[in-house]
Image (cartoon, rainbow, N blue to C red):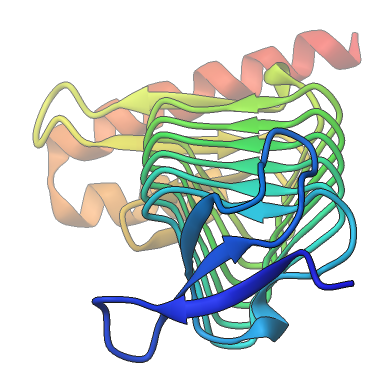
Length: 222
């Protein structure tokens, strides 16, 4: 038996969902969020789309996953298991969110990123490319985790602030020892070289921070 039906909405190309039976915290007749077609939300399990959340494209929500508030899931993204996506979070591309992962605030997950286990992604964090965030990791505070980075704990990345210039944030990830600064992605040596080419002040400060991280890594080896 189907657990919901599609009803007309005020948004072109989208339907709202209406529950046809009781399950989880959903009751018969409850109006859910917006989907483009039935393939976006499974009739099996306790998965549901709430409020103003939108699921479209080839995206799919299934198992016991929940998407609510103003969250959007689209592209080829998949949200499943017991995952929760809420607030203004965006999941797109080929990204997958599963396990007991919780994505909220203005988090942005895209590319081929995977978020799973008990991971939490929040604030303005961006997870993309082939990055993996899992375990009990909590990635937040304007962090950008990308490339082939793996974050399974809170010690696997550090977010810094450019206090000497624009006040923007940049991220170092431990697993691949890479830096993300604006559109730049590369090693500490490459970052220092680029920074000095921009300005002496920028070069000195980035060099200081890169050396600080290098000292941390040396101490761990010892």
